[in-house]
Amino acid sequence: MVQALGHITIEALRDLGRSGWFLLYSLYMIVRRPGNLVHVLKQLRFIGTKSLFVIVLTAGFTGMVLGLQGYYSLSKFGSEGMLGAAVALSLIRELGPVLAALMVTGRAGSAITAEIGIMRITEQIDALETMALDPFKYLVTPKFIAAMISLPLLCAIFDVIGIYGGWLVGVKLLGVNPGAYFYEMENSVVWRDVYSGFLKSFSFGVIIAWIGCYKGYYAGHGAEGVSKATTESVVLTSVIILVWDYFLTSVLL
Amino acid sequence: MITIRNVHKSFGSQKVLDGLDLDIPDGKITAIIGPSGEGKSVLLKHLIGLLQPDSGEVEVDGESIVDLRRSELNRIREKFGMLFQNVALFDSMTVFENVAFQLQEKTSLSKGEIRSKVLAALEDVGLKNIENKFPDELSGGMKKRVGLARAVVLNPKIILFDEPTTGLDPIIKRAIHQLIKDTHAKFGFTAVIVSHEIPDIFDVAQNIAMLFRGRILQYGTPEDIKNSDDPAVRQFISGSLDGPIQMI
Image (spheres, rainbow over the protein chains, first blue to last red):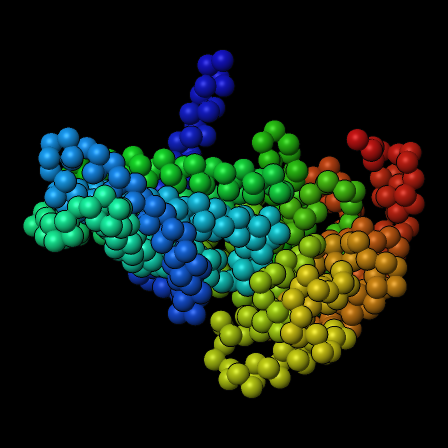
């Protein structure tokens, strides 16, 4: 029992150290050898452009439900005019960065792990190594750069679509004054809210690329190994995003 | 010259290499034979630093490759080409892109020069008009040939072959073996082939090492191996079920 517990602890520590090294080496490689522009553009298309549809869809409905719930709560205090500010602050400070990151995790994070995992089990990564080419330069660094650029942009799109989703429900369906919706928003949202949201998105981009690449790079054997790595990648990335979000919010508040 | 001295390697509680010694001479084709699961591929991966020994020494042209920094290891890996058991072609790239990849990344050749080199390498292995196909559109034998073209395109000094004919029909097997002999005669590289192909490998290799229980049981010319008195070597060559090599 004690031996098994010790073994699990040692394994967990080893995994922690290895993943920490993986992150540091990836960041070092971004500075040292950022890789081919074509590889980065391909990843930008995959992580960024191809996530647009799911981001727009999620953002629209998130904004609409915020409009509904916000109107219900604010109308109890006779403050329906504050709806625009409530929707915008919720989205820009919190829901935009977090939900956009969770959507990208589900769509692109899992695919990153599966792609690198399959390359691992079919010895394609070993082939790169035998050619004296650093696999990080081709497989990891472009994904990090693309995720760090895409996430803040996707978050901005999420915020804008969400605000208009709230406007659609609040103003068009429930009759909130359109002037008040945007005026209160402009009054309440400050630059600090916007950049804290972008900072969160940027760091979530790093987390998605880090865990996605790491889990794929060290995937176990066979199809089962890749499947396990993909599941772990999505779950771990989502959990780390939520935990990191709490700490970052408490610092940036 | 590749020198392996007293190499030990275990995976968990399973000991795979147990004090292995072997010298692989320059410019020759050396085959490593032995029962399945004895660590032949593990040994091959030690030669190029994909695996590190638990203890012992691996030297390439007098330079140790054990516990080297990545940049130093890559400098030594420039001497190598490798054909993997499952070929390990990049599956998101075409045949042309697979063979051209190293030329694009490691040389300053123009597009036209790269194109002519790639087509020449493909022609050397008997392939024409397939450069725009993806690996999953090729047969097993064609994949092996593309893998060989990718391995020789930069004229490496040493080429490692990990079971180059596994899963192929007898005719393609012979064709691949002939191709290895022909390309070796043309380029003069040092070849290390992990193989099960008895007796075909006797016609291909100039030296043969039999790996058994984590060590080299016998090393010599094909004639030495064929005439061996060692019961394990004799059993392996004859494919008999009776003898020191036990099926698990």
